Image 1 (spheres, rainbow, N blue to C red):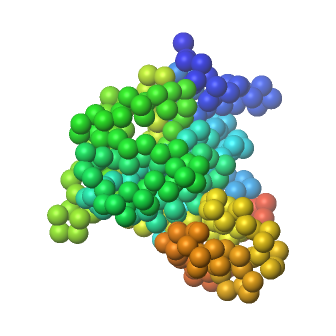
Image 2: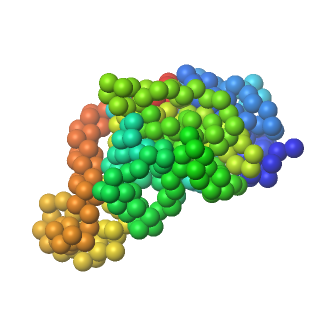
Length: 337
């Protein structure tokens, strides 16, 4: 018997018209996808490595996607996503969906080794599309500096759920587990923050973990592909650690929407649609100067805008090589850069 949570994630199991099966993607490596259907896992492929109608994507299928596949284990279509977490893939020069159809995006940071980098958290939040972020500070047995603590606490002030935990001491692990109950949660973070260790602690699994590089004080990649773990009462998706994270290419106003402190003053700017950069009469810039918006958050925002403008020429160059809308698009193999 499937749990109610898993049954809800899978939805209907049959497409009666085609006798196709509707399954849940748990893993994907080199164009081979592990799909869960009726409590069993099946290794499926995209038929001919092509999916019709999907363009400008590094990977047309991500962990958490619901797909239709044939009895001979060929994936024929991806069902609509309710939400997703995606990023710009620098090597592939296109957007890459990391996880789809999730309830929570747990962005994991650490106090040190690697050090706390709030701008990474800002970027991770900007990569969310219709997903509620949860900010998780791991290694809480080590104290933040006063400045770091103020920056971390700001996320709570802005309305985000935040929690400080320690896989080493067990601090707040039960509280975090309570937040995850009945939900599907994807865990993302920089290499070395202890994300996979935290996932192992929460799920009782034994996924590979690694040490932090002493020379560079940063993590080494141990999780090399996203994978779904079925836990007792909740579902988790462990994703590869990254060193750099870029928001997906698209409308820059999507980035602005990830800054709640901007939204309340949007209508006070001199020009509708102000991006709070070089426009005259920008209310947000005045608030930064007055100390009512944290300058580091504003700088974080400007850097994300700049990253969009820098990737645009490559994007346009690549777009000319892509099939026209409605044509089939070749899949790029691989899960992480």
